[in-house]
Length: 386
Image (cartoon, rainbow, N blue to C red):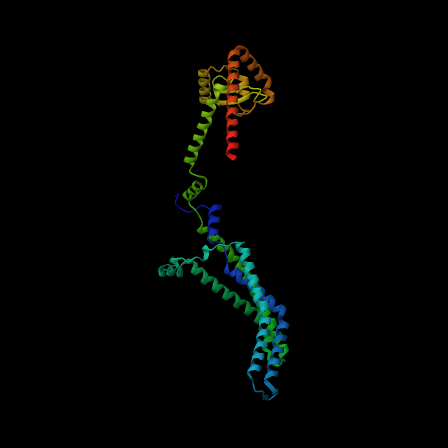
């Protein structure tokens, strides 16, 4: 049925949806890249972080204690100095993490969506306030898929943690028998291995979810055959209207050609299929010019107008067939046909010398009148400008 949405969306429909903010984007892919960035920063800045925290703790306890067992009285100035120093240390410590999260979040969205700015995606929509619509979304297939993805992520993280911990179980069980730096090294190593495996797993999930979001968007934007027809009609115009406009244009062109037939010197015919009206005026063009041409019914119309106007008609099948495919209206004939056309014109001019002279006289009179009109317009413009 034409109403079933079985066709892939057209480029225009995809562009319109993109302008509205409907794009394939996975939050899991964003989270995976952010997690990779944070894990890399933590691995790179691990020693710096430990040294910074250790130095800050030394400074704090040094400000609080006068001796290892006696607390120093805390004044307001001392508290402000201690708080300011601690806050600055924490800011410098957290700044790389915050910057990496912001940059990676922006980069992940740019990779998925490409540069896009639209306000329609954040415009308030009243249907979102409808409790019934919210209830439908709560129990929709999309919600079920989101729950499945959440359970899958939990299972993957649990599997990664179990596999890593089980591989280092003996080391973890013996942490009580080693000093703090050694225990800290084991814990950091295990946590880093869990984070690396989790990053890989989350990246795979994010890519798969991105592809799923693209498939779901394509499914939402699918069109019926009638939708495609309507879109083409709206984009290109109604075919019936275009056909009518084309017919009107052709009618105007043919009317203009028929009006020019009486000025022709000769009409070369096939005799039934083609008719080419030629005019030769060396003051206008160095070669004969086509003023009208047509085939079949329009050719018969040209011959009727030529007969009424007394324009000579010459039946020359080879020349008519040679002219029609290569000439255009208001253009000169091609050089390779000059000789054949010149022979026809010479015959016509010799036979209809009086008509030729009268036509040239009318042409010159018309040219003189047009020149006089242009001169009058020029003078009027000059007077108006003064």
